[in-house]
Image (cartoon, rainbow, N blue to C red; front, side, top):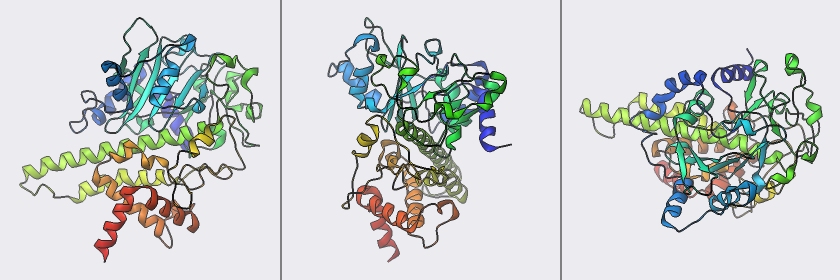
Length: 451
């Protein structure tokens, strides 16, 4: 079976998460929730009982102390205020019209759900919906889910959601950790997914032809046809979708009234960044969870066997390597699907995103785009600067830094990194050395240890 189709088949068995945020608990998902509960209920993790330290929880403390206040405005309610407080740019807006959210009764091709994001936070809004949806990448817990009531008479309270969201957002689709999902479906004319046709989990490894089913896409991309901007006309032949009909769309007014939204865009570049970022967040969370669980287990075993507290067994080292190596591959875009020509968005997202830096002395940044053959000019993820990456256990980061250095300085890198030219590897190594202080410190320590 085709690997992408296999993932699509698995996805159909557990639910409908085509967006990035909250989902209702479905009976079909209960088994997956039970199977993945060990990942987040483990004593080393304690996801449910632990207090988040993410951007949303910090904002809630400000609200409780009266140091911040959310202003409700028009039909969008608290949306603009939430984005402002969490520093989420409106240019990141992407629109999904498949009925795949727990607020699905409000979603259709003429009333799509809007999603906004920065490096750490995802915000969702639907027309007429009772709540704003928020998901945050907590440094210790991974994805943490919240809702904020749009009722102005209620206290301004971000309410944490757990099992209802984890029914789909802690499954094989998220590598069995609390995470995020970008899905591509075959949407019917009313936005309901045609599940018999399958679906795809979308990452930067996905072929363009399998991306964005059920999403609006604004931008130019030549003859690289995707699944966005169209609906299935004949459900019996859903897989024969005419992808050319939704290609190179720059104005969505032909589909719905865009004036109801903060911007008229569903930017192609923002979508590409979103699919990379959700994938990396899940890899970071998995590396964090599994490393902490391995170390916790070994600490108990060391006490039981009267071994030194710092003893590391081959088994523990192997467990850490098994989750840290996929993270290295993700950071370096191993397996990224190549673009077949230039691509561009329609909003100011690309320029705003790239301007954030940080920059090395040669004015190079990991946020600079390529958009001709690949997403970024220098293929190393900007999430290496994120709070989630910073919070990785030292043992995991030690492995990641060592492998990054090995790959980027190798005369002949492993085949998984053959997509990186010598110039790519040299530039990435220099950028990291000059902009990632912890990596620079590791390089200095490594140099001393080997001399």
